[in-house]
Image (tube, rainbow, N blue to C red):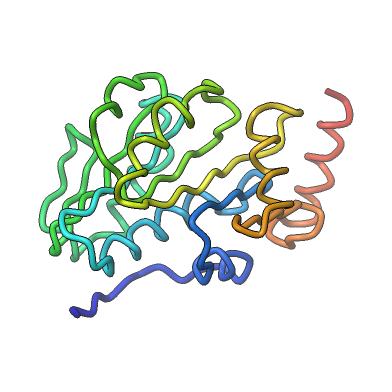
Length: 201
């Protein structure tokens, strides 16, 4: 199997994500924790070393423009010098083993119908339609036993909250919770200011 030189150095917080052996994952992390960056690189690593032929991976944000703004630069940087093709118009990179990684928006679920996926990242799933998972995404993963990672920030007891509660209680899931007050990622003065603003809201 070919070896590829990756630029990615994971934060210690995300090592359990990269080392997991569970098919389903849920990550509740504070803003600017690096969850999107970590998950995009996770998709790249899995795509590069998959034994499957013509593997397909997806990153899905609530909106297509959001996917482009948030994750496209991360994906291009992660595959720089590795990708054999970068399709700007499709937000897709093609890797030497034939695997694809494509960015999508949940605002156009029809773009996801009829495809298959070997892995998917659902970013800010709480801002997507609740039916997206069961009706659209899960069928794309079924026949090839693909994996899924739900990631986001807490926004009340919505459908992402319930997914994460399942992950916490079900041993078949990987779950991770990273609070700003515990991670040490944000500078103390920035954290204090953000907490003050949230209390006023």
